[in-house]
Length: 200
Image (cartoon, rainbow, N blue to C red; front, side):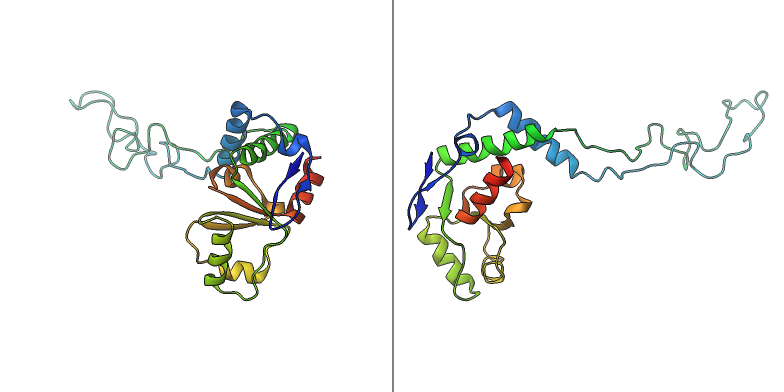
């Protein structure tokens, strides 16, 4: 299949990478796993055994008229431990390589079908000016979205960093969440070649 390049000739691309059928369950699973992997999972609270103190029985078992108590660090007491204390845990979900690559291919294919993928020969501006980058994107019909290049140049980084809703990414750092959430994806021919090498 072929992809139209803005202001240039169409380029030939792999059918399996840019013409794959969209699989919502696969994309959902991979996106969910990616977001889960970003969770810190470092929340921690102390249970009754971790709270300091409470080694001695506060009063004898019988004869005081009060309810029996074995420790002052019971969850029922002020200053006691939590009954169901949160513990550090790993939220990551296993996604094999074939599934991950398949989801990226499905997302890219859907971007092409929805005309949300804008291919350019190169992504650069003469000087690092936000105004220049805004005008360049306006020419491409893009107001907000994701800019992807083989390697984002310093001029592009400086010119685009203050544009609201515009994000930049090297192709090596591409992830499913960024692709799914972007209104439009502006990608260079060099980045597409790198993606095809990666996805086969």
